[in-house]
Amino acid sequence: MKRYNIARIALLASLIIPTLLNAQVRPDINSFTSTQKADLANLILDYVTPTILQYHCNYQNQTGDSTLEIHSDFDFLPFHRVYLEGLEDSLIRWGRPEFVPLPY
Image 1 (cartoon, rainbow, N blue to C red):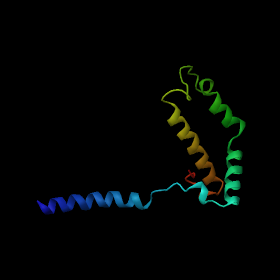
Image 2: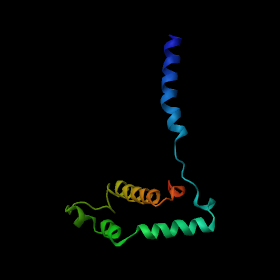
Image 3: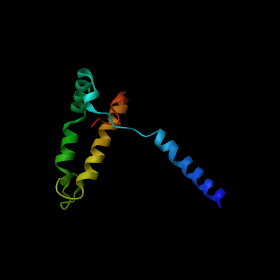
């Protein structure tokens, strides 16, 4: 019986530990230098193009579904998570992975 429990614990540990070791931790924006903050702000401004703004602000027309409202119902969090994920993907593509994940 003890061997079975030890085997289960070992299996769980082998699944969990790699995930914990590779987990990303959001840095505190206050730990950034003034230069880093300015760089990130400029990169965010580069990301927010008219196309991104139109997609964000005119979501109903973009999807063709007038029932979707991203700012007042359950779509708010998933939509904005994808929006931020796009920013993080762009930061990586632009060679600026030090800002991923985005700070809090």
